[in-house]
Length: 379
Image 1 (cartoon, rainbow, N blue to C red):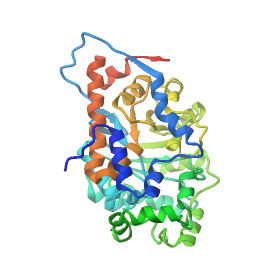
Image 2 (cartoon, rainbow, N blue to C red; image 1 turned 180 degrees about the vertical axis):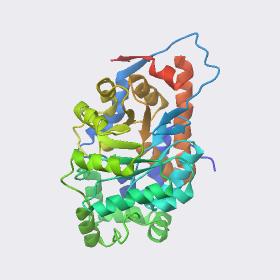
Image 3 (cartoon, helix red, strand yellow; image 1 turned 45 degrees about the horizontal axis):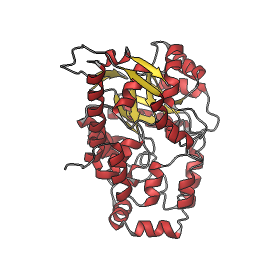
Image 4 (cartoon, rainbow, N blue to C red; image 1 turned 135 degrees about the vertical axis):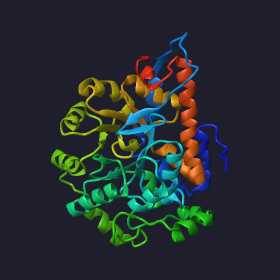
């Protein structure tokens, strides 16, 4: 199945047509005035690349090593929760798409298919994303399940002790309990196939939480969610989790240099420089603006992943040249998934791969290491 999309923006348009507005807004939106979300993307325009000429670019090698895995390119899929809102095959489709692209798929704790189901769907590289739950037995159980299912690495998200103020969701009635507006109900009515698949498809809410109520049971679901988060989250929690996993381990949601240094000190293998896609704190800086300073502070002790605002292959180039090891996509991947399931998710990855390859040729960089040595100008 071919997907008629030239760039990520085309996939976004397709996703908007395929989804009821509340589901699209959940994917597309940010916190408060959505300034952080917009800045994540626009910040890349502040950087310009200086091309090298008369370099042999007859063969371009985009392969890279990240979290102990050899990947076909320095681009991975970020964790994205509740994916059945975007496509009925949800995380299984995403894992298969990432495997076909020979890159890493990250499964959210709040996935629509569980750890084992996604492992069965794909034999490609996989990372399990986890939060520190108030119930430590649940934390340990999910780590054991991920290890037994063959996930090679873990990603701990640390910037979501409380949810951001996502006003699009509030206006659409995507609250707990759900309070849909008339216009939102009309939107769902205009997408009967989506509604049928959402209500009667195989996926479910909080698939990794055995015994969790479904979102349709509004009050019970809200009470359960409120009981999950560990509000007294500290560095000791992260350190204990790193030790319990005993393998490649990333911490996601770091912006401050001091926090990056601390993450390296407690044994993190990688850091996602991320503001949660602009969905948490609207005054957060763009991840791309933090790369050079964090790299200077941590040296080569940890791998750096830029997460936020990636819509072009040139964005990946800029991140690598500033000191990152890879980039991660959440929204861009979600647009593809919503547009056409597995094929759409794969199309998002392949669009960015093709753009990355073209930029490398034009810049005179035949491999990822050559990209990292390129000169960057900030406007």
